[in-house]
Image 1 (cartoon, rainbow, N blue to C red):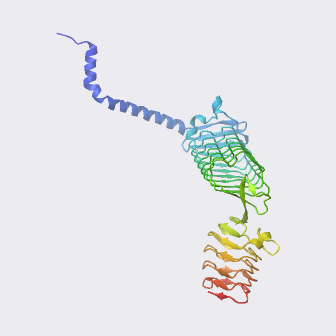
Image 2: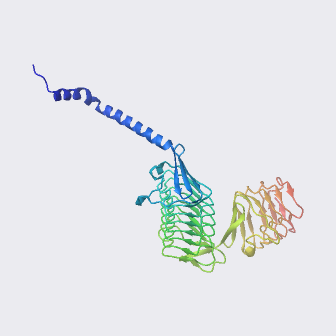
Image 3: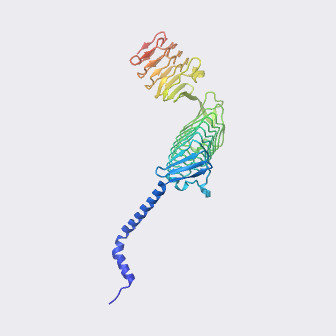
Length: 419
């Protein structure tokens, strides 16, 4: 008899029993390993992690919710993951979904939350005075940021490459936006710059390709190199100062849709960064209501009630009332304030939307060039002398069916028709 060597038996066994099911066996083993790994990772992340991240500042991470909470008082420590000094949570930064910063924390450290790819929202309290360099670098899931009114500086690259960031509100205490602070935030469509910002650094908004408008307050004295370079959707820039700030090389360079810049009526030049200017003015005229004047048309927009004024506390456009030829009140405004358009003597046209419910006393008093007005059915109250002194008014339409309160001396034109 011939006895086959062991290796031959093994080979036959492999050929007959193992090879046909090799893929399935491999898959089962791999699946088992993955399940074990995932369970281990889940267990690790579910554990609460705590530690220090500043002299008097601590952190707590809840793996179950993905929430990182920074507590204590004073400044966070700086870190640098590229030089073997990462933040304590850097190794599981991708599991951080929300961030809570305590009310007594005074600064956010350098590189504190960089590469936290799953972080989607941040509210920075008023206690924080500074945001460190690259603090939120490449937080690619971050969609909105509200920066508290205590922050005075936003560091270099603080929000750089936050590619899903769509809106930023910068508080009124911020004095400087440093270099590259929002560079490559390619989804950013709007930014509200607080009225204390004095400088916008080099490349601060470089390649923010979705940014379509920006309002620069009169506090800004310098705009750095390439600050808004490559903002290809940028079509509207408003500067609220009366003299051009120091503007460095190619601040608004690269391809964009800008043809001019909006500036106040009393702006002292004819160009802004080499572009022609439109002399307009903007401001607030209610808690959530703003106005824009372009030299002829005054537009009121927003939501809610306009502010009330008086014959000794005038509306913000009173000093150039003679230049106002038309008033457009946009949908969303719910009331026209008292004395709002008092003695706008060259006003000839008014647009009042269906959202308006009341017209204040003396709102259009002395608008002597106004010949007709159409009041929508939504209006239920018209104040005293609302159209007093409108000596050219001949036609008023659509209000008698719905107005509940209509004071005497509402109109004082010599003859007009109600239609």
